Image (tube, rainbow, N blue to C red):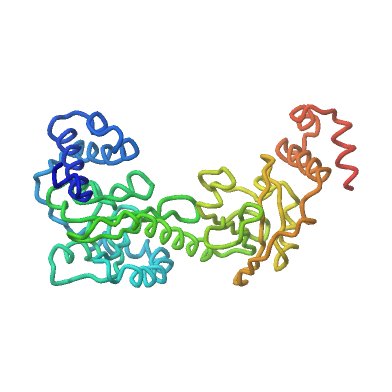
Length: 368
């Protein structure tokens, strides 16, 4: 039996080399060569092919250029909210990776470095080049990296050595995760990079978790009149909560990705909370400072909601079961929403619901 059969790290590097040869030299598909191993990593092949489409070749030298000074100033100004939200997270990250030979890089949505932290050896030019504020680490500039791939694929990634496009960057191993702003757009990304360091795919989880913390901080920084913490019934409230920020009239002014996943809305357009939650929205303000309540969605699902005034500390209390919206009231709310959607046209609302106009009046009249 060969020595590499006993060395998973060496076997992994050989698999990477096979895939590189298939895509970058032979022009075939990596999945044709390594179907099992690469089935869930086709994003790497997509990134490699984007690099080829840019006219790059793996043997080219990488310059690690700084963006022009004016562009760097614009990036810094535009990224001030992101930097402010990320600073406490980067401080915690520095402690987590202090002895791992990895360091943290924060970029804007274009892949330009706006902040760094962790054990960076400035005497090593390979570290210095990529940790300068203003250096362009986008996929177009430096090929496939965790930074470019995370921004291109909008998902957390892990890259090891030769999975990078250029030979020059094959000394790096890195994890990356995109960071989304309160409106659902990509604001930047968080990267953890090591130089000729042991493979640490678990860093993808750390990068993704840290990116979620930054997103939560961005949402909480939005001016708002009420914060709704969302989770499924029976689960404790923690950093995995969905966050919805409302203005005083019940309009959503910010949301984190967890809330968008729970509510089934991939992005946040101008939306009123009454279109998301099947109850009278004013009751959410009445619930502020009290125990969590169980709230139905228009889909028929139920969420646990903890309503908080701005700056109120979280108290992870279980939902009060007697706060569930009664079925009769849910029916009334559905009818009221249909009338609102029909701009007050009761006949149109009744037709949409499949009931008579008299039934609409009777149901709404019952509530006064």
